[in-house]
Length: 278
Image 1 (cartoon, rainbow, N blue to C red):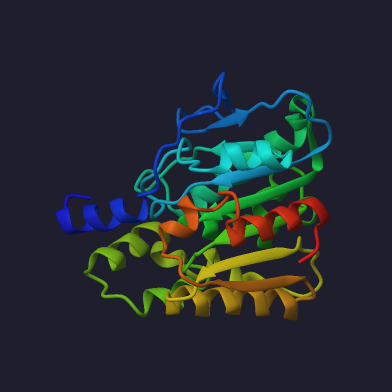
Image 2: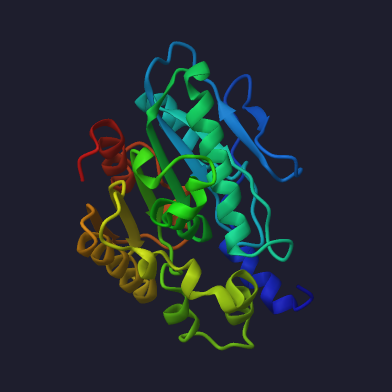
């Protein structure tokens, strides 16, 4: 963590703005004992049986904050969704496995409590950007994480990863310089567990998966390859998944613009949240 070049690279990954909360602000909830194990609920008067977005921020598994919601509060209000944003433990305190365990614990809390805020626990969608995209995919594929809370991936209504590139971590790690900032980031997040933390490699026939709507930046070759491979692995396992290219977006802008009025990715995701149709 002392390498200044690495800090700059990770900061860029965590670059989305901290948006102002809507009037009244979010309600912070503890879903675990650690100070990082908190989530924000954005309550909306009049919601009833609303689709629920459980948002997981990015930041290279080592940075970021649950306040990094950008346009999502207005997006949720405009579309009649309930928004929750998850904080989780970060590297080097934990690796990606620990991050995913926290996302699963937050998901279990949401499943048990969203009715209190007008949400439908059977319409619970995981949405994540960058490292958060990897984490929602991992929780949506590997039954270990939700299984610890007596849930399964099939209890999710859907998963929406935004421009992840770590779905097949060994393949991604082979493309970066091990001693460079990205190599160090992946090493800290995955270590010698890279294959065991790769949702593309874990998709298997005989399990039930939620549908996946996977967005990737058109100009990012690694994200595109990884997204298409994850979608294909899920389809080969009997699931429903689609990888969608986002032309004109950058790794940062696909997150900061997601949910703005007229944003193509946000509008397509809104239809998915309402209907479950890819």
